Length: 334
Ligand code: AMP
Ligand code: ZN
Image (tube, rainbow, N blue to C red; front, side, top):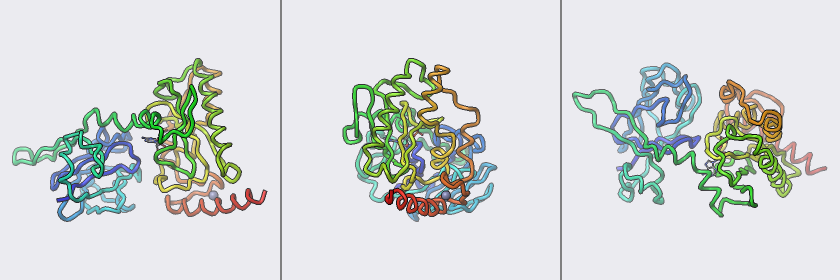
């Protein structure tokens, strides 16, 4: 029988295994890494039917869970199939389901050594117990601490991987973003172990300036530097550990850009420009993130060029095409 996995499209944690016909409750907490208070601790109950290839989704929380933009409704159940997109709460936190055939080549999900096997994607350690007459409540999943740590530490692995590196010197390394949100998307990381923006102090000023210069160099050497705009900056609240400067072309033409959170993280003040970080370090000796910054991820989708509001990501992507061709034509002509 196939194996079912519930997969965060934002890659904020590893896929969650949904055992055949066993209820799994997910919500705000470590399994999903969703910290949004609008999400209940018990937001959805999922039951996979691995022989039929679907998952029964029941909304437990008060705020809406949706599948392909159709609200489920509190206490209601809806079938979800591969190819459909579930938003955990309030049109945020997208998930898909995947059924993988021929699981015999994979070890049990409890065995983390199976995670690196080809064709057997990362599966968090999931503890489940069978429903019994005495314990009618469905079981909750638990993800082991090692696995929760794993995804957020990914940049530390990538920065040392020669296949990911595109530039390095004695202070910094530049890697390609593994899930680029535009045609060009690099990350500049210092070799020095600095966990995040919050840990930056005035003594890091010259390092951060160097990161900025390297970012500028990356843009200059890009073959499309003339026809594309670029911005360099930091996410106010990063999800990955080890401070990293995003250098990203402003076409946002990428299949990895999938949701509102992705969009708003690069086009609102959630994206703190590299120059502003340098300025804060020079004047205050630290970087201050304004209160309520995380709310920016929920803002309506707005074109970063003409400010037009678009209802959905596909509509936004379609709209962006018009700017791209206009931009290319203008810059090609100059
Ligand atoms: P943030 O922490 O929000 O500033 O963004 C982290 C960035 O790292 C995202 O743009 C991801 O696409 C990217 N990313 C996630 N995992 C990896 C990885 N293992 N190697 C390289 N880039 C990654
Ligand atoms: Zn526009």
